[in-house]
Image (cartoon, rainbow, N blue to C red; front, side, top):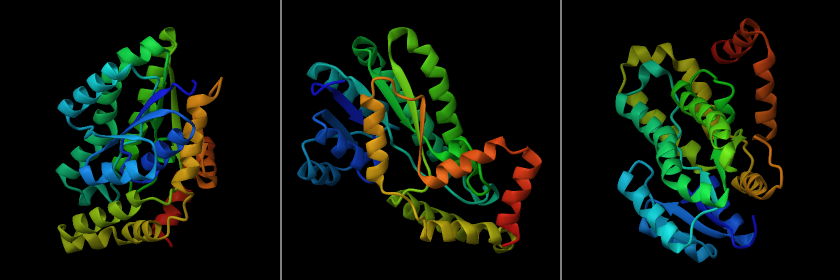
Amino acid sequence: MNSETSVLVTGASTGIGRATALHLADLGMKVYAGVRRDEDAADLEQQGPVIAVRLDVTSSADVDDIAQRIEADGGLDGLVNNAGVYLGGALELMQDDEIESTFAVNVIGLLRVTRACLPMLRARRGRIVNVSSISGLVALPGVSVYAGSKHAVEAISDALRVELSTFGVRVIAVEPGSIDTEIWSKGARRDQASSSQSDAALRELYSPLQRLLEKLNRNPRGISPTAVATVIGDALTARNPHNRYLVGTDARSLALLRYLPEGLRDRLIGTRVWRD
C-alpha cells in the first residue's frame, strides 16, 4: 500500500477505531471513518484529515450507501472491521436483546460490511483487518457471549483468509488484550443494568463472578488504543503481514492457556473466579 491507499475503519467514534483512523491518516492514507452520530463525525474531523461518515454496521442501508460512495470516489484498498460492543456477566443474567445486539454488531455487522466492500478489495488486491480479541482465542467465564462473538470473528478470518487468497486479498486478525478504552466502562454499565433486572437470589449465586468482572472493568490496566492502532497500521502496510497479531502482555500470557490440558486450564481459571 502507498500514499494513495484508501481505507474504511468502522466504529471510529472512540477507542481503537478513533485512534486507528487518525493513525492511518497520519500515514498518508485516505481514511473513511465510520461513526454513528453527527457530533462524533464533526469532532473526529477536527482531530485529523479523515472523512467521517455515518455508518451503523447493523444497518444494511448505511452499509450499502457507504460502499457506493467509496466506489464512486475511486475504490478501496483496506478495510478495518473494528466496530464492536462488549457484554459481560453470567449467561443466566443476560437478556435476549443484549445477546442479539452483541452478535448483530460484532459478527453480522462485520460480515455485512466485508461483503459490501469485497468487490472493491478484490479489484485492488486489498487487505482486511478484523479487530478480534484475546477472548477470541481464550474464553474466560463471565464473557461467554462476547467471547463467542470474537471466536466467530476468528473463524471468519480463518475462512476468508483462504477463500480470498486466490484474489490477492489478505485477511488479518488483530487480537488485543485489555485496552484502556470506553468499551469497558460502557460494558460495566450494561452489566450493572442487566443485573439489576434479575432476581436477587440468582445474582447472589453469581456474585463472585460479578465482583471479578466489576474489578476488571474498574481497573483494566490496558494498553492505549494508539498501541493497537499502530499494529493495525503495520498489518495494512507490511509487505508480508502475519495472519494474526496478539497485542499486549496479558494477551500473550493468556494465549498460552490454549496449550494447557483442558482440565488443568479449567481448574486454574475456576480457582481465580470462585475462590478469590
